[in-house]
Length: 109
Image 1 (cartoon, rainbow, N blue to C red):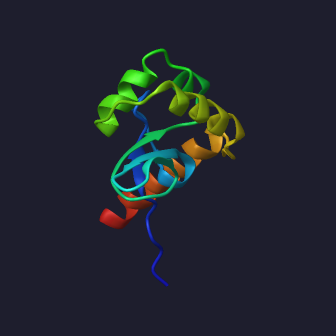
Image 2 (image 1 turned 90 degrees about the vertical axis):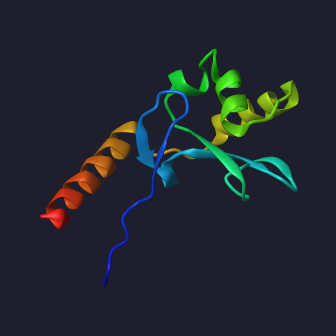
Image 3 (image 1 turned 90 degrees about the horizontal axis):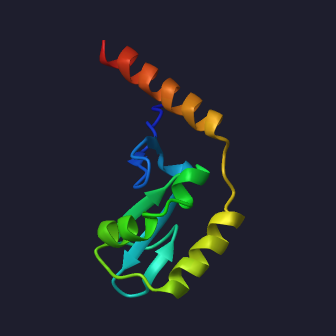
């Protein structure tokens, strides 16, 4: 059985790479507007680090990544969503990333 490699994405705040399943996806959908974890269109990803989702420049970074203006209602909803989001621990993310990179090196040789 062929094992799929995880899809890696970059957090817009800390610029670190994580598995896509462990990040919160924020998407600007052309039909539904800005949505969380679903939809097609321009997307941005935020990791679970408290420094990232409480970053003072997060609003500007999200607006730049999504190429749209975000109102205060969106950020209130974002704060509620981020506090209730089911995260894996930071250590589990690092272990997954390291194991992925090791497998990639072994398979390339």
